[in-house]
Length: 271
Image (cartoon, rainbow, N blue to C red; front, side):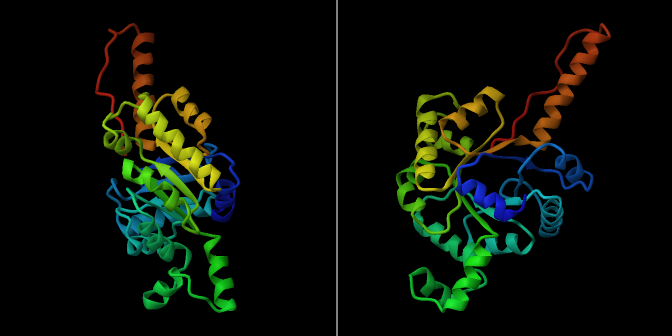
């Protein structure tokens, strides 16, 4: 799948699956390639990746048919352009709460390479020459614009956010959203699930993809799809590695008749 196909799938309401990739190891892309994913999610908000590492990862995953979606550190149009310059198929902007923020990101993602006063005029709706308009629309089809919805103010402004042209999907950050709603990490709480359903259904009704990044049990993740999500980022490479390593070691100890014990502490990446 390429970035254009991923964007079309999201817009059409088709379900797509990804995972968070933390490791920049050169052996990782080939392993991930065979797992049945539609895209990969690379986070630079919480994960320490420099621009060279990020670009290498983006170029490699894209070449393997896994469009890399990069979360930038803040909803900053300049950060978005840097990620795209490095090879990102699209960007996720964290903690967006206003349509104005989305408009600024739209300029960086969907109207590149226009900048400065000309960009401001275009974002205000000023007419564009036909040749330039065609050029920009063709480029916009290859780049995804996704924003994180992670707070009550964002939900309140969701109708205005969804009305911004060029927005391809909204993505729930469950840890931040649950904390903002006053029910930290209570992912079964009615207030949290109700907020998720509202976000999913409003986005889908607007013809925009709706997703969540979650690391819990399979049944819990399936619940989000039943509530209306069509974009699921399942767990993370480091979390999955730790989970299966712990399970294998425990099984080996039991098979060998060693004392049953649990070592280490279960860890999650709450982003």
